[in-house]
Image (cartoon, rainbow, N blue to C red; front, side, top):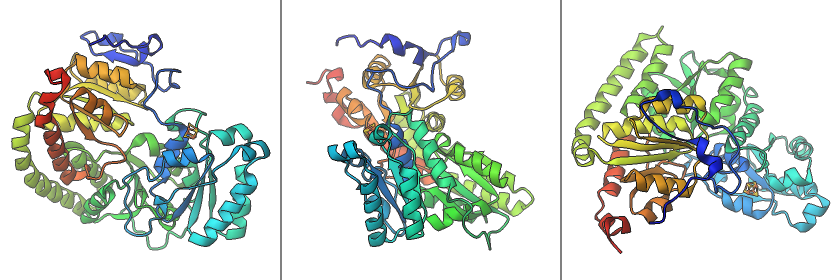
Length: 452
Ligand code: SF4
């Protein structure tokens, strides 16, 4: 096979762990190199994935239809009630709107849609073209909000203006405009908001149930199975629990500053991190020992049921090699631990949006020879998978074809999956999915194994 090369301008974003740790100086938190065909999504997509699961809000994409199509029903985020979030509305800007401006079209669309769907709020997303033609969406949103008497919130997410992370920030700014606008009556002392949990395949329900079993009140989940009225009163909670730290730490920090609510960073993937997420909350509310008692009972029961089921899978997967390429680096930490539980070795760990601290942490956790990569592309991922002889790639929808073309197993750990991977039950699902994909007999026919 032709040798795959890393572009010169990308070399500083790639690191292979060696004995000499002093050489670690990975470049990250920078815009993608032109022409590298980054796997990253745009700013608009970043804000869209964060806000998408708010199920009783209207989501209007102000821009050409392609932007709306790109993010249509983008997450496997499920709702226990309304499903307005699954519809993707667009102003479908045409050339004439680019010349004369799209404000009138946006205003007309908003009035019509709000009248028809009666949402609790509306999020209006700016796309690249809006940044270019300069529509004043703040003014349109203000006017529509005054007339319809619901929050109409501009999301300043022009696609080209930064990285996907800037989209997360735009989403947090929009959410922060709703936080604090509802009554906090009836919220107890032992109460939390769950942030950065998007209820993919019902994961937020699993996590919420664990906390409720511990005697904790969950005021809101942001944004999985999200409701505007819950977000409005979320400033009444005593603690924010933040998963997917890249997307929601900004909101947690803003709530800490404005309302004095502390926050904890957690992960719900794998036995170790899931247990820690429960114990950390119990520790925060240590003036109530019954919460810690309940957490201990819950963890003991769940791990006791789960562990024996993992043993056969672990035996089969022991020594197999995994490559990880995910959106936020924090998820990679949990995945490395979860793969260790299955006896697997990690040969590649990368993310789209990690920062220096994240990559330093990954370097500490990984074995010698592991490649750590920031903002990678298909050629690089293919190169590392082949060179390191990975048996599995863990990523999202854009990484799936890379794995299958190379003839290696794949596990979807991103927005689109339909099986919950969070919580103790999620660990079992993860183990089964990895096992089924890695051990599939189909790979014997892959070119790298001598097949056609
Ligand atoms: S906002 Fe810009 S980069 Fe993002 S989908 Fe639309 S046109 Fe593409």
